[in-house]
Amino acid sequence: MRTGSGYAVGMAAQSSSQSMKPATAAQKLGVYLPATPAEFQTKPVTRDELNELLASPPEWLVALRADGPHPRSVVAGKLGVSTSGLARAGVTDALTTAEIKQLLAAPPEWLVQERAVQAGVRRDKERLAEKHKAERAAGGSGD
View 1 (tube, one colour):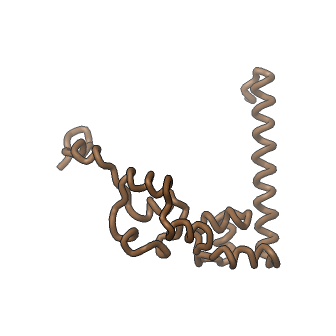
View 2 (cartoon, helix red, strand yellow):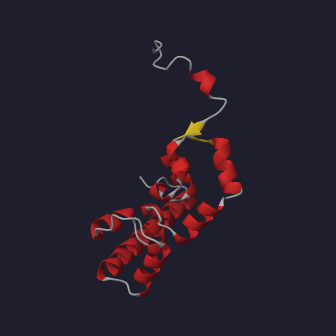
View 3 (cartoon, rainbow, N blue to C red):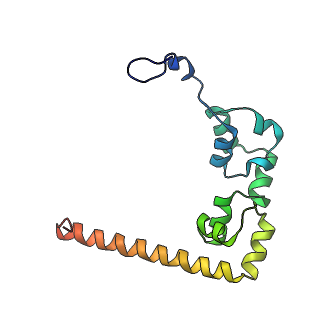
């Protein structure tokens, strides 16, 4: 049921114990959800539980973070490419730390190309940041 303002009625009762879907919690923890224990995958995670996992990670979480399999965002970061770059290369599966190390040790052509693209993006961002900084220092708005 909705009120005239568009907000759901009765939401205040849930605010005392916020919870999130397992996928959201896995993302915040930086782990690949299908590799987590079944119990973690099937029940909502409260903010308190998430904070406890962050403060004192259980063995399964330590192992996942160290060895993988890792989610796409972590794989992209470890390889120095964007998630779009992984998609362009056809990398759709989660990779383990060992697989990432193998790719870094003998980079295939797609990885060399995507790392060059990412380096160019970083250079452009830095150049624009410097330009904006100079404009602010000069007192102009750039218009």
